[in-house]
Image (cartoon, rainbow, N blue to C red; front, side):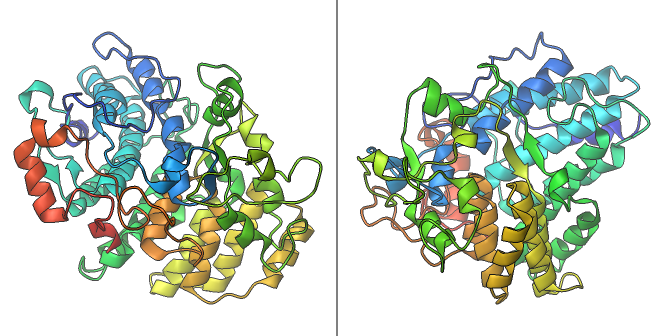
Length: 472
């Protein structure tokens, strides 16, 4: 079996003790408790993938990006939570994936390389999003269980470079002549799609390092160009999590609005006003507003709720589209062609690749329109109505295209910005501005004191305001 020694080394990482009651971002999804000592590798892979929905639809990150505003309880949009726990990721999906790899190394099957590759790629995705949230995280000493209960928190540079190595290794293992993994509820064992996923993830990670590329000697540019050819390019290849019409694995938005009867998230004035543009609240300049939100009941008017305050009269504001919030099977997007097209536009502006930045920019808008089912003529009219002015145009339209993709949108805003109307709330509970990171669990200083203190000394205060290395 190819490269098994390398793969098992990539997965000598670590289960941390689960001693935290702080906020975690996937606690509202329907994930069954796992038992790695008895579950099959296929069951563990499926379970690890079932942690995607809570991450993809996590409401606080979407509020950070200011797509939504709160109803009568505004604390979430006023940044009322400081501490967020990553422990559940290590004990849950990352531990599941570790066992999947270990099982296929110790008892190889004809398709074990593909199983290891898929597990490695989704692991890389999780750890990438985690380092973009907290900054320094356990990586090189993670998932070692009782052998190391106090793992070092590695720098973002170490994590990023390690993950690129893992992705490259996984991509090299994929064998299209063998079956894909059982338990693959994301791509149903289609290894061509896993290869697209890996290259798309690598592309986005490489561009995420754009501010550090000079000091890294062109490393990010190199990784970008290695991956961009295999990344998704059209909306028909968009990568998303498919929900079922079953309460055990359905759309969390439908659970919130229908099953729980909560109308706590309204479309924000930041989004509505930007999409209205030079149009009107009944005939917006950007036709995606018709797809992103519903007009007020009994009218064709779109009204955004004030961001960062309580909006008690929820009937006075537009809600996210019923196609999502009342639909058990509405997909949750992971990566889209629009994001990649905008990434190529930026890469041209950075001098990383040749071509026309404006052409890629317009393709990004078009792919976003295609994704949301906007009429072709309306899409053409909108594209012709806007001017391309470089990185700022890319930042704004990428923000529009990443609607409801909270963690991706928040990360890109921290890196290149967005509309100038994205500003901090007037009455903020924690921090001094829109969060730049999430603080570690409040238990971390007690259970891993020395490594916690070393991370804070290197990275900066354990607050929402500390700008992470990747975004400086």
